[in-house]
Image (cartoon, rainbow, N blue to C red; front, side, top):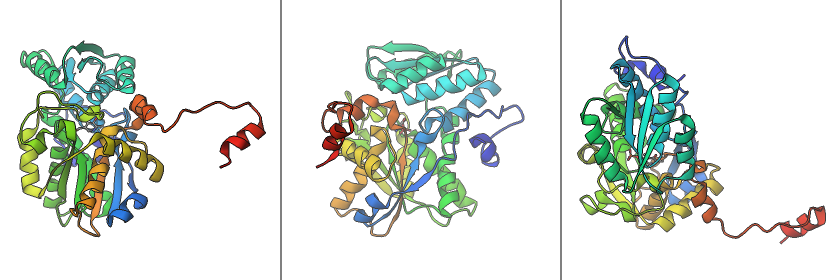
Length: 347
Ligand SMILES: *Cc1c(COP(=O)(O)O)cnc(C)c1O
């Protein structure tokens, strides 16, 4: 059905807003007792990797592209660590717009680059990081010729808030805690907006604490200011100068919660656990909240019995390099007979 149709009365849709969709939204909220029980919490994973381009970016992009069309724009532009470009390229393809994506050269997960190429975006790789790419596209969009579809475009936040609606619709109330990875901090801002609006309508009885998780080498919210050379295996949150700095701070101040850092090894460990103990395959950035919950529990910072929703923002298939690098040993071929295979699997 898509989020524009599903949540039409909660979105600013006019008669001239096209009701486009690639089938985004309605993603599963999967119970994860094998991870949650040892932490003393009731844990659910919101698997945003099931969206059409494999990340939550589709929810915001469908709205931003619908509004761009309403405003008669012909070209959308974005900076991207990968998933925004995949979503922009797909929704542009679906509607006949041109998509221009500016990416940090050599810093994009293979699957995400493949998506932008296949969907037919005009791709420019710069010799610089995401933050530099965002500065460039902001400048280009200021001329009025291109519509910027990064999360500073308020329609992105508007579309993304539908994920919070879905959580409440499925659980019957808001959770006690929302655990979410933070890069540019558009998504944490969007969830706050969704929870706030649903509560005002009486759809939920409470607001969740917002726990935002960053990679230790790329944690401007934890360090208290922008950082120059962010580094992490979780490329989707390798962002040193977050675009939604103030909105995210305001949301966390309003809801309670905080920002926390997790080291890359713990992110990769959590990614493997989610795959092996839940049966979902998130990309590295998406494992940061689960890694962070494990760390908070170890430090005594998780309330017992809390209902916790962790957002798995993107699909692990997008980043096959990281996944295969974290394999524990090489897979060595054996002769093609049953005895050899039996020997290989015994003991
Ligand atoms: C974009 C993205 C994030 C970060 O979201 P922000 O809104 O920039 O904070 C996290 N995980 C994945 C998979 C993403 O694509």
